Amino acid sequence: MNETEESKEEARQDSERELVLPGDFITDGKFRAGSGTYMDNGKIYASTLGIKSIRSDFVNVVPLAGQYIPKVGDQVIGIVMDMGPSNWLVDINSPYPAPMHINEAPWRVDFGDTARYLKVGEVILARIFMVDEVKHVQVSMKDHGLRKLQGGQILEISHSKVPRVIGRNGSMIEMIKNSTNCRIIVGQNGRIWVDGEIDSIDNAVKAIRLIEVEAQSIGLTERLKEFLENIQKEKKV
Amino acid sequence: MGGATTDLKLIDEKGLRIDGRRPDELRPLKIEAGVLKRADGSAYVEWGENKVLAAVYGPRECHPRHMQNPTRAIVQCNYNMASFSVSDRKRPGPDRRSQEISKILSEALEHVVLTHLFPRTSIDVYIEVLQANAGTRCAGLTAASVALADAGIPMRDLIASCAAGKVADTIVLDLRNEEDNFGSADVPLGLVPRTGEIVLLQMDGDLSVEEFKTALSMSTDACHRIYAIQKEALRKKYCVAPAVIPAEVANAIHDVATEKPQGSDVPPNEMPGNLKEGVQ
Image (tube, each protein chain N blue to C red):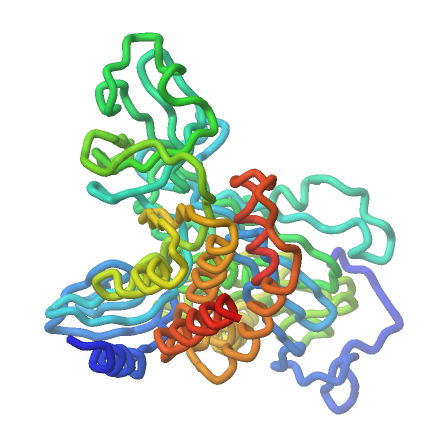
């Protein structure tokens, strides 16, 4: 799909966006209740404030607010909050703190030696490795690309806007990376790590904030493109 | 209540009340969603001379730990009246009345929130009454449910709430202060409008069964009108209209650009907060 087709496709989806509130009737019969909805007497209602979306036979409501709830496999950016002799406690920007056992660290850590590898306040890129029915979470750094994040800046956005920041197949975030020359990592939990020259970090942060504020508006891709082009023009002058 | 007497003519010859309302008329109601930046969700309600602010935090880790429920979230509501909310200064802090109201509002809200989705957490609702003129628990509940929706918390429906009562032998809707003090009954109602379930119902004073039924149908009807205003308030905040946002955003982005240049000596952890303030 080339770029104009992509934005056309986006515009088509945009025009169909419909805001629903908790308790709003969505549909009945042939659909199945997905996330952000519930079923009552064979009818589907919205449970969350968000945008209605129908994917094959599922009805979902894409939330516009709310806390990040960990899901197995999500890549998240965590901050080490505490450590024990055999684990670290990682804040993943959700109601549930996530311990990481030394066996899940990418290093060979001896019992009681956790402080040598990660200290309180340090930032890691991790993956949600386990979530059980009472939402006990565990994270892991044992996968390629997962590591301690050093340098750069962290910014936080609402986790519901993460898909917008990333864009379709990463188009949005690639655009920012390419035009600002920054290294950017987006965690599913709404934390974004940005590193590069101080001025380019500044621009990348502004671009991300633009997406955040305008997340639900129509023609966002176009405006972001314009915004980034302006920045590049200014740089040349 | 308490049978206090007054020279006030609570209902005049034309059948109108002291503020000129008909018996089945509500006081003017204005709701605004998302008024507080620091809370996860918030709402402000002006209902006649009542001014009520509601803020929602969470779901968040529940402290103290023994309050946690391993299977679902708990809803903790805190109703508080500001010391300047009434004409004689109210002694600040929780008292018998506000503890009771906090409890019944928590239970009402817990009934609609899908608590099973967030085990071990707590959803905290803070209701601050800035100005009181009878019916603050209804105003608080109305505000709280808008604030919950604003916080993105899944629930079965919003709760709308309104009181009805008996004043000078007439059943009236939405009592104001004088009517509450010198009337003979006050019945606050909390309703889940979609299903018609009642999540809050109290009665102060006495009514006959017939009178009670009239009062209840009057306030049920009013709750549906309030429900529409609640939804309107949320729609207004989350409208998808593109024409409104860009100008605002352009300014915000410009503000950030012209504001303080970011030095490298700022610790990275402080950046999000600063920037957030700049843009929002």
